[in-house]
Image 1 (cartoon, rainbow, N blue to C red):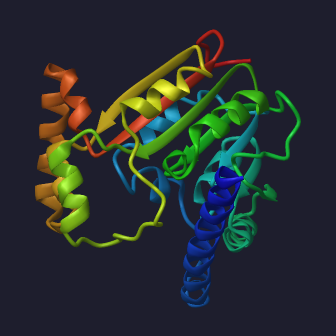
Image 2 (image 1 turned 90 degrees about the vertical axis):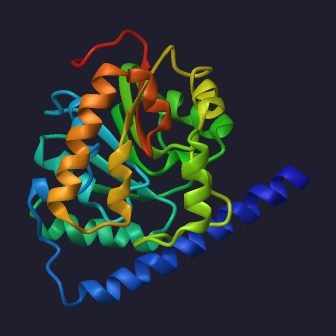
Image 3 (image 1 turned 135 degrees about the horizontal axis):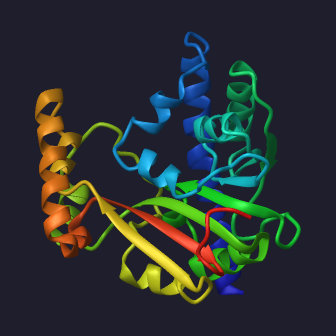
Length: 262
């Protein structure tokens, strides 16, 4: 009973937080265009484009955009030929995703749903995409749901904040920077969360992004940011074990044999 009450409270807090964000965005977007180019989404942070490549050729595939938020990923997925279901706990964000898809001339299937109790048939999706969603979830519940709705041989790719760098944990707690808004129950992922995912997926690969370039969160000098990203590339190529100190990770989960096609 206690666990049920805690889960209900967590879901309510999450929904209310993201509905407030969606409402604020809706007011702002009354004066902006919802149309955008693929590069506006794929290159707004350094890990999105490489994460997208892990999904492979999407033409004709059923793709779940889990935690679709503002819907930009859903639009890019649809432009690449996918049959997209855009799912979010917040009905406000589902409405925004629908409006963005309409503004960009693509079709998506909207779904307001809890990621820990997905309302979809078994093995329905060929791919699952999620950006900053897993760290909001109970992975014991969500992991079982993800493997249930993903077909055998399917791929799920997630971009998530990483929490194994103790100095970064301190900075997240004490340093103010743009966009620093969090729900009360979320926490960056760590090795124990990856271990939970490995209970459900036979293959889980984790790649770190933003080491020294995480300073871009507090500096606005574009040439400096570009130089920091070049440093990251050099350091992580020579010392891949330093990925554990990165700010973000891309997690690729393979539900069976690793492959890019059907």
